[in-house]
Amino acid sequence: MKKSSLLTVAALTGAAAVMLAGCAGGSGGTPTDGGDDGGEATGGRACVILPDAASSPRWENFDRKYLQEGLEGAGFEVDIQNAQGDVAKFATIADQQLTQGCGVMLLVDYQGAAEAVATKAKAEGIPVIAYDRPFAGADYYVSFDNVEVGRLQGQTVLNGLEAAGVDPAAATVVYIGGDPTDGNAKMFHDGAVEVMEAAGIEPAAEPPGAWDQAKSQTNFEQALTSLNGQVDGVWAANDTNAAGVIKVLQDNNLEGVAVSGQDANVAGLQNILLGWQTATVYKPVADEASAAVDTAIALLNGETVETDAELEDGTPYIQVTPVLVGPNEVKDVIAAGDAAYDDVCTPEVMAACEEFGVTAE
Image (cartoon, rainbow, N blue to C red; front, side):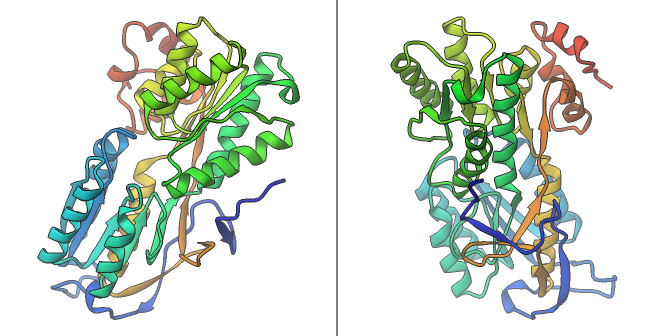
């Protein structure tokens, strides 16, 4: 099997435990106030930059909330801002935050913008956490096991082909990947390819990747035309990309096509219930945010964090375990609070919700 070149793992045990190993005593990571409260922080400032609101609804709907609650609950001042898909705005927000003072920076990269910010922050002795997306210069990387995310997506395609009675080695499969400037996109791709190629799949078409529904729709439409309307499966790197693919499938009355995804967003869950998407990779944002909060608190308290994995460049990698969700597991995402019943089970989806046991309670 093909192995990812992006990370080496000392000991993979699912979600890596965050363990504190003494005090590092960095000036950028020490809270402004402290008390004899068993180690809970009572001061300091955490600066967070989210990338956009378009690539996934998770950033504003979930990550902001969980990070805010976790850091404030530990006694820290929190400044969370969103770059709104603008590299220049990302840099401006970072400069403003650094001017006001940060004890730690937690950055979700957008098209490489986080790397320059990390350089500035570290020059001031401020530790930097790469959250969800990797970039050079971070002290820690907190994300899901992204190669495993890809493997689950590859398995989704195989599951869909099997359900349709299609031999993987003879299948026409299109690859609709993510933005290549996002370091995670390669990990998703490598994991998916590892599984699909082992089953004999070779891509029939692979347009340039993007985290964009409209672009993915256009790219897939052009690929489908080049294939004379023949497709058995689509590796789609997330639910937003999958939605663009599914619109083309619907317009062409192509049912029973294996389609993968990621994020378990509302549209993705609906497409799964209605049979247009085979499955999605559910990444419980609360778990990822909790790992990032634990890491940030340790750094703000001047402590070192040990992990059981690292990226190829040596960046310590704190991994969280992803979960595959098909129609029978949609109810679990709603029960966890990562999607609302009323949003998913709209009138046109209600019958499918009842069929697969999705309830409001």
